Image (cartoon, rainbow, N blue to C red; front, top):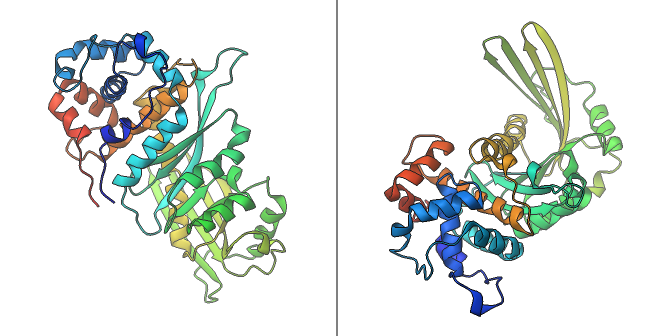
Length: 376
């Protein structure tokens, strides 16, 4: 598929403003200035409008700007009315055109609440469920849900929008649902699902199947084992993983489409002389070794470290008070576009926060980001 620029995809979004007579600014101008502002450390509509004024002469080189730079009220009004499904479709078209599909790449799915997007008792905080490609370092898509409990309904909607072929989809216990496993397999992907107390019988069956585990390499081909240890100053962590394709103790195995193995991961942590042990249980449709499954489970948390944490630290997402209409959801998607552009740049050997500052200072660097060609 031919790569498409983000500008091409943005130009296909329908202008949500109905009254042509009162339009003082071109719709595409508003979108481009907002994206450039987001890339350049402007985190809300006021700062984006001020950024636009500061860079007005630069924008005038390629935007029409019939009435100058839009006000912050205009940005707020337009993005609060912008159809989030159209914006999502724009995002998906762009990301699909630039993404290289890697065999068995881990796609981590998890949710994050935009904490300041609530409006007292009138509007709950926005909760976004996102998909993160751990090898490509790309946000692949996101769907809004009003409450954490609704992730179960939001995840299938997100999966339906994604290309999952050859990928391994990892989801925490909230997504350990038969329908979700089936949806992944139907799209030619595989799943690695955490099993907790929301599936008590399944959890008990996995624990029983691996109750006689030993921390050593097995001769029995039905059981695979891997162990690794990590030391850091006063912290030592040993991770052990057992997998088995013997599913005789799982009465419900037929309920989970293509279920091929179960796993137990044990983490033994010693910090300042105090030791704790945590055990986690998994079901998987792929044929993974214990080492591969352990690594895949660890890759899942890249969505926390490389996406959610970065959105909070580098984009100050949790401090954003945009609430009107679809504004919070659309601004979150604008952050995801900016993050993808910044993550894919390999020329600046600095963190995301400083890349955003550099984008605001160095217009050549900003143009480089906007016209970046992705390796296939």
